[in-house]
Image 1: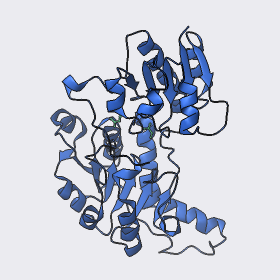
Image 2 (image 1 turned 90 degrees about the horizontal axis):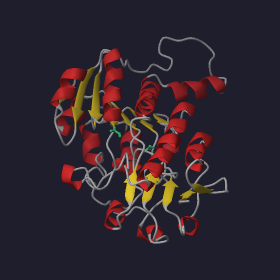
Image 3 (image 1 turned 60 degrees about the horizontal axis):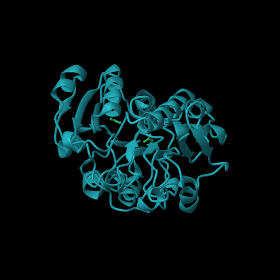
Image 4 (image 1 turned 180 degrees about the vertical axis):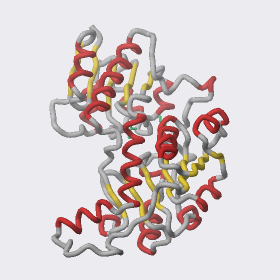
Length: 332
Ligand code: GLV
Ligand code: GLV
């Protein structure tokens, strides 16, 4: 029987899928494992099912000469050294699609929370500050009819665009490629990054973390945004230069931000938590019971398919089709 190591107790449905066909060892602790513990766990295993917070590099891969598959319990896979995996013939898989709508829902929740100051209003109300109704109490900004700027019109970006249409928004997007078919289907317009930043009332990030998207939003980009605009990030922390963002938020050169991810997760940049014009959440955009269960099942099926030699949801070994992603600068 093939052996698989799972770095955290994922929803039982996923473990059940695995247990039917392979011998499974699960991290017994209720915390993330250290690198050494992961190396220990991987020994003699054929498959590894890991989290986006597990840094999987050559050393981890070399802990087992039998390792055939690394199944990431996430759509993003910047935590894995893809080049090292590919050169060792190890298949890397992710969990796309099952989390698309859930993540788009959450990006929308952050956008709405920023525009209508929901987190601030909640704090205000709890603190007993609601003494009287007033014409200007906690006034925010309209969402409907405004301009939405989407950086990265992939699956999640497109799902966000569809929500924007329901709010009668003008929708701009940018990215490495124009997507004419999607433009027609979604009624979105391709513009340069500069134009998108200058014209959008809400800028939302849906790109993977790559060398080319590292600090995609920095001081220069924040300066292009309108003082009334909001930045929403549900992608990866390092896509935004978080210290530049704190400065922009402090100086109010942008109106606010809704963040689910951080540059040095789980740490927050100094000063961020003290600001009123941010809504912060702990990397939970895909966190619904339904989606986390589906992700567990997909991640488990990915392991089994790869071990049978018919891999699915593969993110490497696609260089011929231009999908192979370059290695990231190290950030740990
Ligand atoms: C979550 O951040 C994911 O990549 O699935
Ligand atoms: C995520 O996988 C996306 O394509 O947006």
